[in-house]
Image (cartoon, rainbow, N blue to C red; front, top):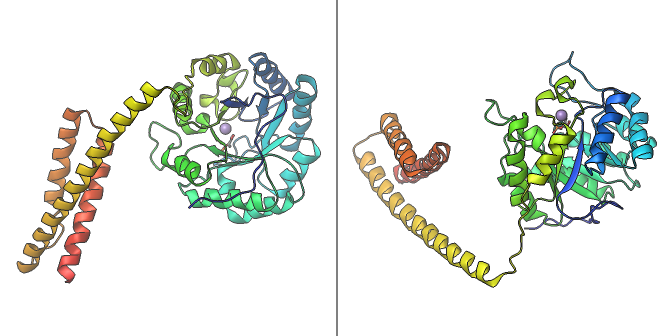
Length: 361
Ligand code: PEP
Ligand code: MN
């Protein structure tokens, strides 16, 4: 089911509407000189929308929590002297009032705010009758409904220029990423609200500079609309998120490396090759369905046998053995270990469900 929103185009006068829309700037505005120097360098490489956090939601107290409204005149200079648009995060109504008063062009809701419907509603109410573009970061937890809820609250308050920001999701164990991208969630958002632009924030997904390009390229390959990337004139000295910020020069290199592929296929030869390959995939998927059907029938038979002989459904040693075996096979077949574990967990769970049914019959 699609979700209907009242939206206007998320575009800015004088900014190219070609993909990708780029927003860049430091994680935090730290001082006037850093803001201006970063701005000058970003302008030089063609960035037209400048992001900077003033009120920083930090995990622990006693870390740099942003300069607050003291930084608003610096962003005003970015606007007046460099002719760039400015964007900042707001997390409560006071931030909204201060940002609006200072002429900030675009505001965004951070991941922690999106996760809190009370906070989102208060901000939405404070924006009634105001015409300002708003971007909504995904909530820290992987819940597309919560993300949509925040988008709806803002939209119902009359906000028409909207975009979603995909910044990844919290995980307990740090993996390769600081915040797990879980691409399936923004993909689902795009399926439900196709006209809502999605910008990916590779900086907060990666948490370090080295993965930024891959994540940005993936966002482009998924046909997302833009990128919001943290860039600082002196990243090593940054007061927040130092490891993930790029110099404007390196940002420029990253942007130029991006390969932009078309989402529509014009060439007929390409199209028919792709269709053939898709048919092949469909055939395999049908086969998989048959295999699942037969596998579950066997699972039910096992269930009956266990029932007759009074044996428990779950036998941990057997399950361990299957998993170990499959991980070895996966490596030989060039399949990801994590993927195979997920698949077999799901299959195993389904088998247990079938057997439980048999036991209860
Ligand atoms: C940020 O953009 O600097 C920020 C704090 O983002 P998030 O809400 O995604 O953590
Ligand atoms: Mn940051």
